Length: 429
Ligand code: HOZ
Image (cartoon, rainbow, N blue to C red):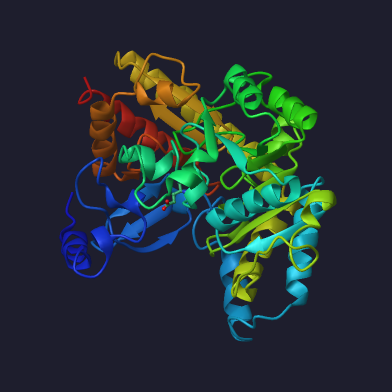
């Protein structure tokens, strides 16, 4: 692969940006090599600064569910920008956005817009603590809820990719309030609750995990969590930053038929602009300032450009529900065909997929938690990643990340990906 311009930019970036990137998972640090510097993207394709074209399976880590530069979104942003890019005062568009979210996610009574998934999860936890008067939270090993201090304990995403055991800067006091259990292990959750009776404010979970690769909840796991939270007056928070508006218009809550008490969003909700949100039952949300005293704020919260982008995309998804069926079919096709070619080549492989989220783990083990995900052969993953990149397929540069499909992907693109996998397979043994 010829990437002299990316190499030159990456080298230049080292002098002014930590590690040359503005978010660690972009750095290719665990797979090796030089991250691609991107010039533009359209539909299913990325174009780097050296003129190479790639089929994109990152899709900005989730937001671009309909592909890049989706015309209605681009036009809406351009038009809105002419009226100024920020006011720091309320707009009618914010109400329209909140009403649209409520119409797509029926158990959300009130919703507060923020500027990232991290902010959404951080604020939801503060709210749960303020509401319950309790301090501790339970999260799951390998789940990632953004980079707020409370969540950087046994976290997924870049923390897992770079094998960071303890994040310097997170105080022992904060870490002590975060209890962890293995994903899909309800007995471990029950044990933690028994050990910390009436001290748990919230259980936060990715209802489908995407930050240790894609891992699905096993049968009854979320149902049991729901039941325990209700019995113990614990706030159940679904982190739907990845799954929200992706797995269904009502996200994982709708698809898996479980209602959380609070839900957090990011990614698709902003159509590629910096947007997050958290919402839920009135009884809990009424404690957020200025209605209540749990303080939460933001200069750019509800920013008009971000709102028009998200509103336009969500509205399109709401009015075209067939998109979810198409994405489901593409995801299932990709899983089936990838498994066939890798298995035929005698590569130990497990592929997890739901809708447009999919991950390939190089292990024979069923992958239901972080330990299972960690049994995936990293050396094989790294070879696979580079063999695919060479053939123009852009995958997340880590085995601890889900791939995200966009509906701009055609079956020709999927077949090209499957053929590339078949070619890559011979180099994996
Ligand atoms: N939250 C994204 C998936 N783990 C990654 C975004 C980032 O950290 O840059």
